[in-house]
Length: 428
Image 1 (cartoon, one colour):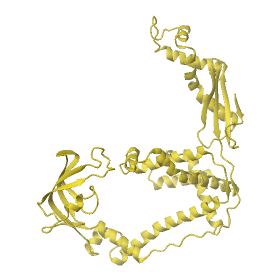
Image 2 (cartoon, one colour):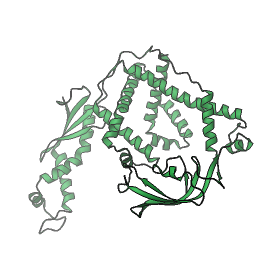
Image 3 (tube, helix red, strand yellow):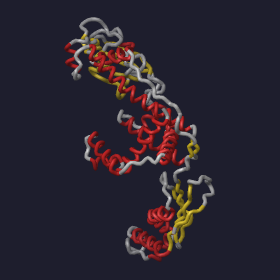
Image 4 (tube, one colour):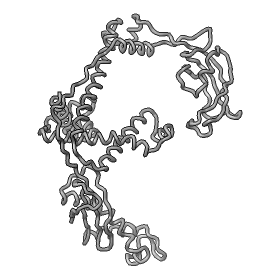
């Protein structure tokens, strides 16, 4: 049996406490199951494992030793009853507390948070215009320079010394107090001078060295260096230059365009046109996102809603997980990130709170506008969208839906997109 009661700690109408009691045969059966399981490993002098009588077990360990595990056993059943009887739809994972626990039964109190009421006084006629996208000659030439840089060639220097921008092929080994330290050695290492790959002062002292030169570099590791034994420590790097390479900037000639291998690009004119289209496409995506953000931000000024902290906390956790995946692709773990930035998980979560609040607020706003405007997406539309997306990502439809979260999520996503498109029309 489940019953809802007024919460004493919260006043929000969308925060509910539902009490569920498991008692009678359902409870005694659960306690019996726990005893049978514990009996198999219970050690009591004079009895073999699995042969301890119930009365002896309870006298030795206490009846209460069975109740907590029995409560765990019936928790999912209690949760199901809470959902079924209360008819509430939670927006975050409900929390649960034990109200009472004894031989007669167990009482759970589920805290269930439902969608808060959203009141929007205005979401039409806001007169927000999209940003005009313009690509300048300066931007095109800047990107062209980057492209030529990426395709530049390294040419060995026969004479001369290492200069800024050169790539020095070096052997090196680091010593602290005359003893070589781990990770401080390399052979035929390609070091681009000016890249700041090594600790401060290293690359600067290599400048001026010639092929075959050997030199001791007296340096000091930064105070915040990741390796504790080396942080702030004076060291000596023994360096030998084996080869010097200088970057040779490519020309916009036939050979370059062949290496570029871009369809229809065979001259400076066609290359600049391609670069312009690429920059414009990216700018249009950015402008579209900014335009939508401006509309949502303006609407949010006309919204009244009391968002429970639990919804914000859940969104913070989602953003934290996404951030962890992003840095993992760069070979960095969260622990390493905290170490490098001298921060903690609490610091990172605090940084994410503002974005999390906006995400939850905008989602609630859009859902309310979707309801006000009677925006719906049929199952047929959702299935068609799922088929197209699966094809786009070169996946089987079932596989795509499993990763995306199911057809309901595709349907919801389409509804949100339709709502945003409507808002763009309503606020031009």
